[in-house]
Length: 206
Image (cartoon, rainbow, N blue to C red; front, side):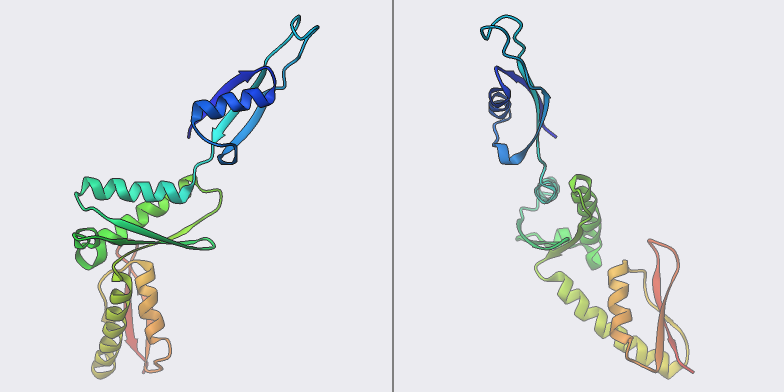
């Protein structure tokens, strides 16, 4: 967070001095007046300069974007980032030639990056943001795969009469499984285990 304390003949002068030092504009800063100053007799004797503290506002979404660019550069994976914001939900869509390296096996790298990006954005935000990180429609493709998996394992649970446990998944992927089977009256689903190894169990209704 960049901030400077500046002085001037009056508050306006002090603010202008601070903005020049920070190389920014007034609308991107927060200004605190420490001392309004005093003109003094004839504008000289007993005068006191105005003192202000000017702080540059940090855009949490920009900070999150910069974090992603930094990580991708360290991994030598050039990326393009498109950002979509709907209220407190922010979607970062990544694309690039080596994007598979940022997705990782079963999206594990992408999931870890999403978790870290959410930490970064909420470190600078004054209200909570929910972050989704996607890479060339991976999330949609993964959701389609999870729905197919849920339907296939539900059939297996019904046929065998036995519980079927899935591999550990992050909470939003477990939600996809739950939602996919919520209207199937022949099975029930519940989560078991502890994070980060929590998993879904599909159980036949007897």
